[in-house]
Image 1 (cartoon, rainbow, N blue to C red):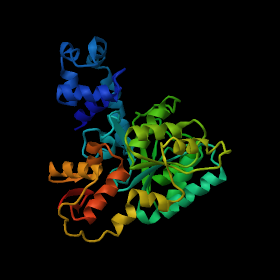
Image 2 (tube, rainbow, N blue to C red):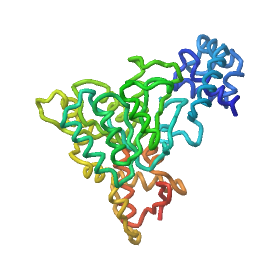
Image 3 (cartoon, one colour):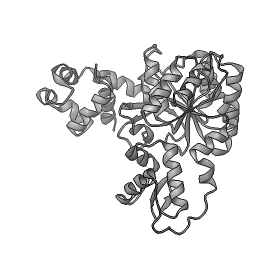
Length: 366
C-alpha cells in the first residue's frame, strides 16, 4: 500500500510534468508503478513526453522526497487522494487538468450531494459581507458543503458564516498542509476541522507563492456544482475562478452591485458578458439549481405517448437510451450542458413520466 502511494506521490514530483501529462503517462503505461519501470526509449514515444521528459521520469531521486511526504501524511492524519481512487472528488474527474494527487485533512465527504464554492474580493465591503452571511444562513436547511480559499475578505466570511450556520466548509489552499496562510485565519481553519477540512494538491513545505493561487483556483471551481462570486473588482482571483468554472461547464452566479462601485465591477461585468447568472438571494440559487423542486418532488405521471421533446430533452433521453442508468454528473459530462440545465431537464422529464430518479443522483428511463 505504502509502496504504491510512493509511486503516486513521485508521479507528481517529476519536474516539468503537469497533471495532464502525468495522467497520459499512466494511461499509456498501464499503472502508476509501470511509469517508473518503463524503458526510456518507450517513454519517449508517448505523445508530449519526448527525450527531455523521459530523462526526468527515469531519474528516481524523487522517491526520497515521496517517502518524506508519506511520513508527513502519516504523522498528521492526512488522507492522500489519487485521481484514480474511488474516494477522489468525482466532480474533479471531469476536469482535464484536475490534480493527480490531493491531500485532505478533514471529516466531510468531498462527494457530498450539494457543493458550492463562494469567492470574492479580499477587500470586501459591508454589503459584500452581508450578502455572503445571508446567503449561507439561508442555505442552512439544504446541508450544502461550502468551499472557499481561506483568503481575506469574502473567502473567510464564507467559512465563518458556514461555521455559524452549522454547514460543513472546506478551504482549498495554495500551499502544503504543514501551515495555514494567512496565519491570522488559523483559528478559523482549526474550527473547520470539526465540520469540514483543508484541501490542497501541494506537498508539505510548499510556500504560498503567488503563482500557486491560480492553480488552487481550479480546485475551487472544479470540486463544486456552482461558483458564486459575491464581490469582485475588475480583475482578480475570483474572476479567474469564474473563468475556470465556465471552462468546466459549471454554473457561475454573481451578486450585482452599484455601477460605480469598484468592488462590484467584476461581478457586474460577469453578468453583462453572460459569464454568470444574476442572483440576489439563496432563493434564486436554490430555484436555479432545482434543489427545492427535488425536495418536494411528486410521484411521476404516466409516460405520455408521442410527447414532443425539446432538442436538449431529446439529447438527455438519447443518452439514457444507451445506458441502464447515469448520474447527473456523468450526464453533464456527456451532454456538455451545465448542472442547472441538466437538473431542470431531468426534473421536467421525470414529471412527464419519461425518467425515473434513483438513489445517488442517478437516473434511468422509466
